Length: 287
Ligand SMILES: C[S@@+](CC[C@H](N)C(=O)[O-])C[C@H]1O[C@@H](n2cnc3c(N)ncnc32)[C@H](O)[C@@H]1O
Image (cartoon, rainbow, N blue to C red):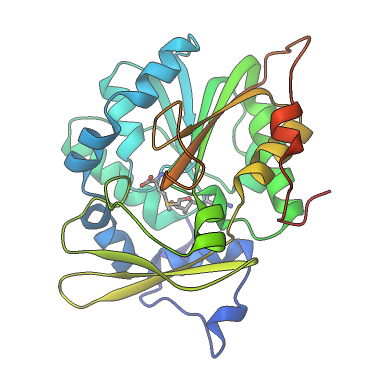
């Protein structure tokens, strides 16, 4: 683990925070003080209640046993899946997050198998194959260039078995970009008396502010992925049969959900109807 990352106390965005649009920034954003607050933000019990067994059911449906959690964060999904009997490896590019996840798991009687790895060069550190990869909690949004997104998806693809599945989620940025921010405050960030809201949004940046009851504030600079753009990229690196859920439901109105979950297959599907997805105009700059 990198000493510099672990030693950082404050988030640093310099004089022009809106200009910080860099994939590597997540390493400096999840400073120890923010990581210590993360569980207050997501509230494990309420989050477990609102998600139910959605991911467990998806993984069972895929026949998955070995799962790689590439965005472990403080360990919420890794621990839940271990408790549900899956064989889980927990990866993250941020050392503070991984350390916290390890402690969280240990306090629940579990030992996490951790790998400190950035998605862009995941295969340097991950040498085994997995039935499933989960990239959850609106994590993929941290990648700021299309090259990095393609690269990360290609690395995910590479560590999956031939019939593996990628489960990746994101905020409903289309709604934020097109209609402004609203939230049901029901999913993901379930902590009471905590505000998670955008301070600035344009097609290249969603800067969110997180305010805690003790008055402390933190920020995250993220790339506002449009839904059709994410699935298009996933198809382009080889994923097929992509299904998208809105707030864990199969049917939804486009502007309704706060979050989308994409379930993408590596398994070869001979004839696929990609027309509906492909026809959605990509306003996020992809070809
Ligand atoms: C928003 S947090 C989500 C954490 C957790 N999955 C949850 O739902 O609570 C995003 C996580 O992704 C990790 N991350 C972001 N970009 C990454 C990258 N390029 N490589 C590896 N990890 C990355 C961060 O370190 C952080 O732990």
